[in-house]
Image (cartoon, rainbow, N blue to C red):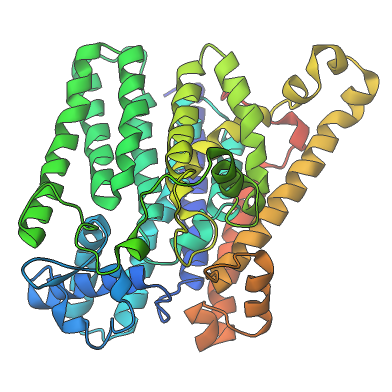
Length: 485
C-alpha cells in the first residue's frame, strides 16, 4: 500500500473520530437537560401514556390514564365514536418510543425513571442528526471538515432544536427524518448506475414517508423532494421514492381505521376541545404571520437563533453556484413551503420555546451557512470592495467577530430555553424564561437531583465538543477551506 493511500485512510478515520466525539458530546448535553421528571405539556403526557398503554396493556387507547395522569389535559385528547380516548397527535412518535419503554419494563424500571430514559434514548435521534448533518456537509456537498463540524455544532446548540430535543415532541424527530431523506436524495456518485439510484430513492422515500406519521403537515415536504428528483434524475425514478412513502401512508390510514372507524379521518376530528386542539383557519394576515415566525420575540426564528441570518447569503451563494444550485433550491424551497404553510395559521404551537413548527427545516438552514465561511467577502463586500486594502486586512476578521457574537448569543438563548423550556400562553418573551431561571425553576432532572452529578455529565461533554473543534481549527479562521481537497 502506497503512502498516499495510507494518508487517505488515516484522514478518513480522523473525520469519523471527530464525528463520533461531536455526537457523544451532544448526546451528553441533551441528557443533562432532559425534562423527563416534569412532563410540562399535555402533548408530552398523552404520548407518554399511549406508549405505556401499548407496552403494558397492548392497546392503543389510553382510557385508564385519563382519570389520574391526564385529568387536566383533556384539550389534547380525542374521544372516538367507540368511546375510547386517544392522543390528538399522529402515532409516529409513539411507535418510536415503544421499544424504549418496553426495555424499561423488562428491566423493571419504575415511573418516573422510565420517562427519563425514554427521552434520553429518543434524544439519540436528534443527536444523531448533528452527526448526520456533519457527514452530509463533508461528503455530499464537498465542504471541509472544519465547516461541517462548525455548522453541526450550530444546529445542535444555537437553534431551538436544542430545547426541543429534551422534551417528548415529534418535531425534532421530523428534523432527523427530513435530513436523512435529503441525504439520500443528494448523495449521488459520479459513476452510479440506475440500480444504485433506485436503492437511494427507496431509502429516501422510506424515511420521508415516516414523516407522515409524525405530523400531518409534513406532507408539504413531498413537493420539493419530488420536484428535486424530477429536475435532477431520470423521472421514472420518482416512483422508487413515492412507493415506500405510500406504504407508510397506509400504516397511518390503518391507525385511523383502528382508532376511529374510518381511514380518512385525522386525530383532530374528534377532539374534545377542537379550537384548542388545532386551529386550521388561515385567519392571520400573511405578513404578520411571517413577522411572528421570523423576527419577533413571539417565537421568531431569527430572534432566538440570530446566527441563522447567515443562511440567507448562504442560499444566495448556493443558488449562484451551478454545482450546488439544485441542492440550494431544494433546501430553500423546503424552508419556504413550511414557513408559508404555518405563517397564516391562527395557531400558538403550545408551551414550547421558539417555534417547533420550523424544527424540521433547521438542519437545512444550517448547511448554507457553511458556504460563506471560506471567504465572506464574496457575498458581503462585492467584487469592487474585495480589492480594497482595508477590506483585505480587516474584512474577514470583522465577519468572524459578528458571526461569533451571534453564535454565542444564539447558544445562550437556546440553552436558557433548554433549562426552563416553557413559555406562557400569551406572553411569550425571553424575560419570562429568565424569571424562571432566577426563581430556580430549572427543568434539568440531573441538575435538580444533584448539581455535582450535573457537572459530572456536562463537563465531559463540553470537553469533547471543544477538543473536537479545537483540533480542526488549529489554523487561523481565515484559512478555512470550503471544498474538501
